[in-house]
Length: 74
Length: 471
Image (cartoon, rainbow over all chains, first blue to last red; front, side):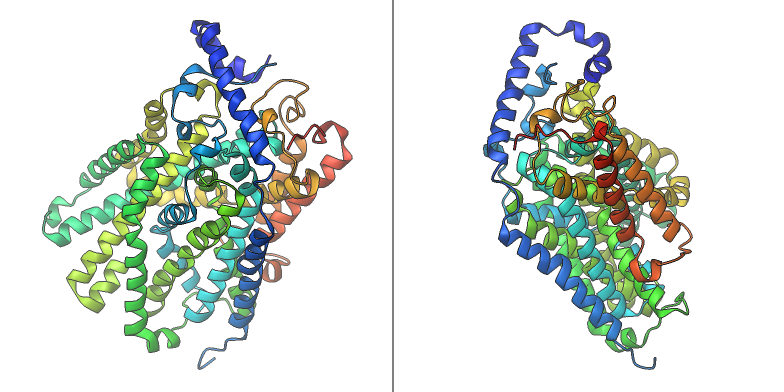
């Protein structure tokens, strides 16, 4: 038995089949659109470049500069 | 086998349930997303983070190490939850089903709920304390009246205002963020004031609790930055699903959420180094008198409020993943998320303040391995192929059912990642071992969890993600 059904318990019994079918159709429509649209919505090369710059190169440079920094009096 | 669904959920606005958002519903551009994320990121914890770093490092080294750590942590969070949430318009918890299983998502959901509700309880109590100080400073409340009974009342008021704002769902978050984003600018002005008035003292100031090992101090500055932004994992999915695609989230996340935290943490860092206090109201009074202190208190009050709104929204969306709550009305779910915060703030604010911070620090250990598992799963095992339909199915034979709905590989990897972290660095006492001073604790924990997830998944066919990926 699907876990969701088990979680719902007795409340399930008050829902009409028609209402459930309508809801399933709504989700089905959304999944269909998400499936089609999701194919070309991942990071592109420009995104990867920004991630490399801001998430790798910038931190590496900051760590390097910070480690070289010698405060006065040290 | 059937798709999970509920009539009431289908009638609710899309941004108030966990179904994938349609392209037409994902209307947040880069600026709007960046503003919302910046407002969510900036809160009282910035001073606390700055204060922690100021114990080990001077202003320049502390600022650089913290900024570097925050950007590294933000990148990990972006790589972990970003692609699935942004491609399909789903929240952080739904995005964990491919890794943890159609029932195993309960583990990250618990992490999210405890973390967000715990932190937001702290923030709301902070908010109430700041508001009391603000009212006293403005002459609206007498000092003796600012007794403990004011904090429960203000906590309750804050919860009611958050409830009213979030009745509009994601639109409420965006609307409040558009107003409260001004506090980020006020924070930068405060930083300018502190630097311009105290620059020479800042350069000369030395950390009070620095270890004799400079490398350990420096690594700890970086680690504090990483772990800070890793804790944004629970918040991110609910926000980035409103953006049209993954390409649109990169700069808002890295610059809008990753950068304001270290910048505003410099306020706490500078304050604790020069004036031995990270409380901006205290040191702004020193610099500019009572009027500056009032501005600072207004800033702190607004900052916590914006973060709490984003957190409560993300946590409420996360609750929708529970089938029993899937068809509850949005106001009911909001009340369920806000109730623990209100009860804690009204009944045990001081006790919670004193004791729960340590527990939250321990919970935060889980986010590094969680990111490692998601990154390894998406990029190494699935190579970007996600079966969005299977995320909403829960029955034997479906792609993410694994073993009774749980993926043992991900659960074992999470445990190994947490143990790796705690072995390298105790998050409560900050005692460390082994390679911590060279590697930090978060990065090895992320790598260990990701590696274990990949190895176990490849070793045992029973937990191998099915090849029915559709997109």
